[in-house]
Image (tube, rainbow, N blue to C red; front, side):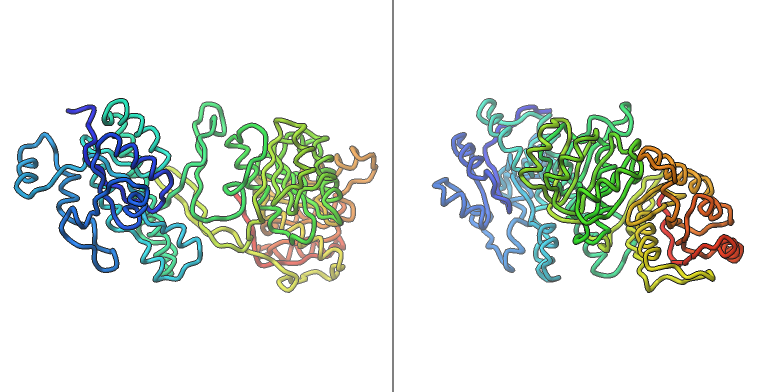
Length: 527
């Protein structure tokens, strides 16, 4: 088996022409014959570098608007022939097929075309056929052919050619693996788009693709490896964010920051809103007349848990808010944008990461959520359910007040982002107690009430913050005990999905306790 394979003929055909001239010049300097097509050939020729059009090389013209140009035996025979197989080399001689030793290809920009909102026919025309075929041919025959699909690999190959006259088998294997990953992700993007176009939400064969943004130092725990991939969704958030300072985000940082930003994106961008997240659960969420006020209210809910947490804002981070945030040890701040003054203030805390996303996520944007289980995946649509005032049904004798209704809708929206079983107490546009992830709803109610009491004590109050609050449950109360726990804590109104066999029992308990209660008809389990 050969190791270093000399490069004598190369085929360059790229949509992304980044550093193409650098590669072409290096090949020319190494006396490599260059074949190319269309725009790539023009770019190379305009740089004064000798290049042969593929149509001239094959003796067969491009046709059908360029759909047929590289699908020819002189191209694929030159890529696929085994140089140490007499039968193959004999066929090459018989049919005047020369070997092609290096191929640089990046495919038609299908993903970018779809992301631009192009129409169906334009997207179809940006499905590359010849490119993937050449990539796969070259990768299959990596014993003899170097395949480059990423311009960032040009520099290393240029060095290899200059120093060794060719590439090593180890390099070719790595490039071949990368090439197959690229064609797989390309086909996955086409498959997903086509399924959506035909309304086939869950096709028989499901494919997903992602582009690696970073390898994490470790996963949830130090003995687990992890990496962060971006898909083609182009959703503002952690995958689009620019990190302005601080050390690299960990796996847990990424997960928690995503949860935080998704939560604040639920709220009207004209209303200053702040969420503080710890271990993917909110420990404080509030709106205010300003961001500093919203942050102060969010922090008041659970200042103990906020230590080492993630802070998300739905508006541009300003200097006044930045000054407040840095008073508490915080891992990450994420916002649509940040003022220069705010960035300067945050810079004083060198380990504090500041991320700006360029916008809020659309809470109504449909997408798939994937969870790995043993032997497979669970796939579902993102929870884009949204409850409005018109969706509420009052089921108790007492009608809720306007203030209670406003707080109930706020609480139910927060509850959507709390791990089940979820109970959220809210008063005056701020969470005052959150109970998350318990095995029964009563315990979640009690934990939330305890948090409200502790928050009051830390603020120097003798009365629990839950007094006069409303309470939201992410799913129905199966028994009256969870609701009664909320009543004991001082809640005056309840919002819940309803739908339990014991709804009437719960309604009767609410009436006896003098509570107002509304049903939403929609639950928000988050496991």
